[in-house]
Image (spheres, rainbow, N blue to C red):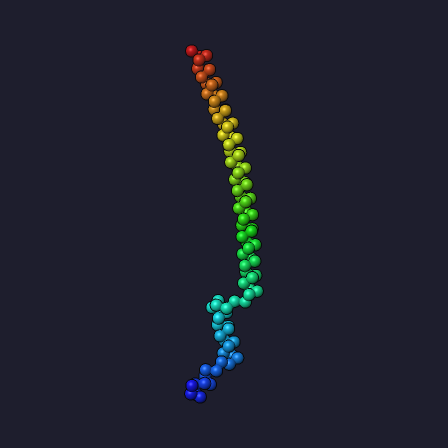
Length: 93
């Protein structure tokens, strides 16, 4: 290689620092501790979302159980009121 190009081709400390900074800025070079911290945050977030989902499912199950009970009571009340109405109609004849 010609000597005038050798000076430009030799990496300096500033060039290496600029390269590292550029790689970090565009996200191609990320410190391991930062990656581990972000992964741990995402794991915690996933655990929190799972716990919230479990609580929501438990609440939905309770509401369905209550709704089933109320539906049974409503059907019983409807049957009783229908029987009373038929009895009143027969008594009125």
